Length: 312
View 1 (cartoon, rainbow, N blue to C red):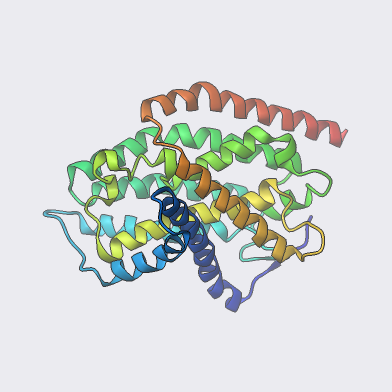
View 2 (cartoon, rainbow, N blue to C red; view 1 turned 120 degrees about the horizontal axis):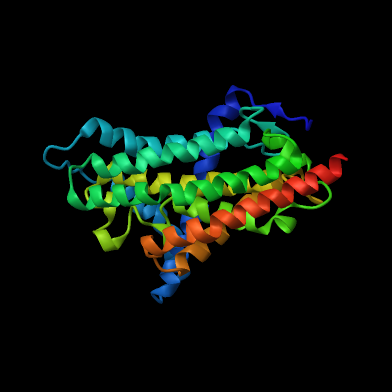
C-alpha cells in the first residue's frame, strides 16, 4: 500500500480554499477564452470572475412565487459542498484529508449526489424553465453515470484497490491514461456533464432561458456558478491519481506535480468544453448508451485481463 498521511485540522480548513483557488483558475481560463472570442483583451477575461463575484455578492436575492425555498437552498448550497466532498479522498502528494479504503466509491457516490442537487435546483424555484432543465438533467444522468462508473472501475481493477493513493502508486511504470484512453476520456467527459458545463450544459443553458439559473440571483447565482467550477476542479484533481500517475515526476516535488497536472487538466476541460456547442440531449443519450457504455465495459475487461496477467 502507498503511504500517505491524513491532513491535520489546519490543512483540512485550508483545503476548500485551495480547491476554490483551483476553480478560480479554471473560471479565469474560461472567461479569457470567451473574451478572445469576442475580440476583447485577454486581461479582461482573467479579471471577470472577480468582477462577476463582486457584482453577484452585492446583488439583491430574488425569490419566485410559491418557491420551495428549503429544497432550493439545499440544492444551491449543496453544489459547492459536494464538490469539496469529492476532493477529500484525493491525495495531494503525500497528504490526503481522508485516506479512505474505498475512495473511488466515495467519489462516485458524490457524483450521484449531483443528480439530486441539479434536479432540486430545477424544482425549487417553481419555474417552468428551471423545472424542465432539472428533469432534462435527471433524464440524462444515467447516460452519464454508467459510463463514468465503468471508467472509474478500470483503474481500480488494474491497481487491485479502491484506495485512491494505491491507484497513483500502481502507475510508477506507465500512466493509466496511456493504456486506458477510453476510461480517461469518458471520465473527463462525465466530469463536464456533471458540472453541467460546455456541450453538456443541459441543466443551465440558454436554450431554456438559463435553465436552473433562470431564477437565481445574487449570492444564490454565485454559489451555483462557483459550484460548477468546483466540480470541474475536483474532477481535474481526481484525474491526477486516477490516470496521470499522481504526484510522480522529475525535478518538482509530489505536491507541485499534483497541482501542475490538475491545473493542466482543468484548463484543458475549460478550453475544450468552451469551444464545443451544446449536444442535443436525445443524441447524447443515444451515444451514451450505444457507444460509451460498451466502450467503457470493454476497457474494463482489458484492465481485468492485464491485472490477471500481472498477478499470475
